Picture 1: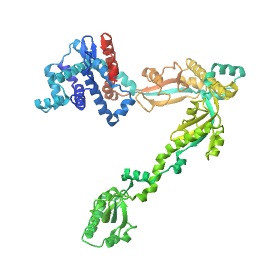
Picture 2: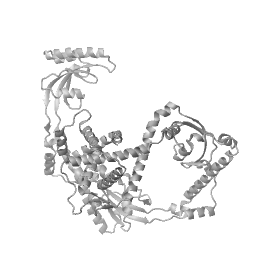
Picture 3: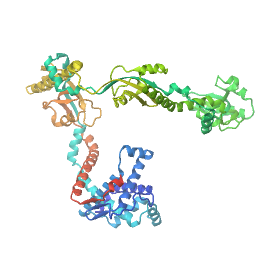
Picture 4: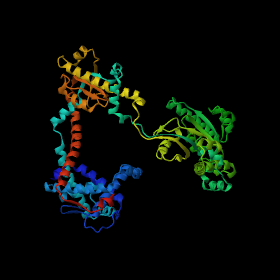
Length: 636
């Protein structure tokens, strides 16, 4: 049995590494559950799973998710509804069920095999087992050696059982060869499409009786949602900025609380001599230009006039005539390499030769200005504008409430009230349903108005705006009379007829193929357009409609279908099709052999999940499982 365990050692190593790291992440002595009065959290027949077991499993799961999601853990855990408590209970039950079945089947993990697994997992293959390191690890994860070794033994037992299921899940070589041959074969098809849209031009309008009957059978399809029309006045904070009162004290407080926001940039007064090179310069040319820059650098260090050197050597035509003077510059104006050298050089200093993407620079720093707070008076207007923008929504909401109360108490229309208060009123363009709003900046306004149709005067918040609304008309959902939607009903009736005609034409061609040699001759006899698709395969991701349809793939991408007459009409994306497999090219033996191992692995993994779930559910169904009252609520 140790041979079986050895075969699946890799999967066990994966468990050990992940499991041990997760336990270390959770820390020693951390208990998410309080001590309970119940003797167990879960009982499976006579086996007890304690609250501590569930708590440990929950911590391990949470640590794995944190490791997986990183800093997005909290957000993703909520969005994905992970319910880690439920997972911990389910995993604890499933683990025991599998472990018990493995023991019943005679699987065991001996001490020698267990020791080898622990040693390899903690120390690797080449390092010897060290008792002190092992004890330190146990202290770190907060487990005794007996508890840890028992958990490893249990997991190894489960992995043995899963390994045997994996072997049972492997497709046979014959099955795999046949499947790979089908996946990699190149198929060519003849086909005829019957698109209902092509039949519309031949369909005349229905008579009144037919149309009325059609409408009566489907009138719910034409039901109109609730709709409203209304007048409205938008109170936008942007329109009230100048009315927000800002005191000198407000400005001073904001200035002191946001000092870093009003600090002048660090600056240097720099001169430079630039030796240009192009992107096409060869290494030899680059070396020569750098040597030239180094010579200029040495002359500048020896005291030669920087102005004269710039005039003589600099390729920067905009500054060479004034001694390479760039004036006062802040970070970000020049290249990153330039900034890095210039801003670490003291006043009067000359940098080393600085390479950038376009040349070599020799830089002289004439002066340095450290970052410093700006004078309050120089930023007063800027601060006032900031405060007004921040306070305007609250001011607007308060003003809107005052205006609404005043309007509501009177009898004037909203339009008249707006004129009296220097506001602008507007009206909806007819009735609107909840999905339509009168302006782009008022998204959701109509839906909020419709929610209270009994209130003819409303004050509605839309973002930071407040809208005064005077409801003019409200219509509840209703089925309109036929005359109101006649054109739409006729259009839909014609579409229905076109679908019937397309299907009938496809059925007719299918019938015709029975007496013809193949689809091609049947299509020619019926003067229909025969289309072709060549060199398509199941494994190809480049397949387009209709050959990416699962139904068509399953029935026609089959080697045995070559040459067979069509047996049915396919429907894909509203189009009817008659399809015949015209030809298929089988892959060569080497191509098949190269993919069999991967196919068997994929097939085994897929079937293993189904098989393991089925067997676990069957074993659970034959067990008495008792979960302590309130456990799942406490764990959620």
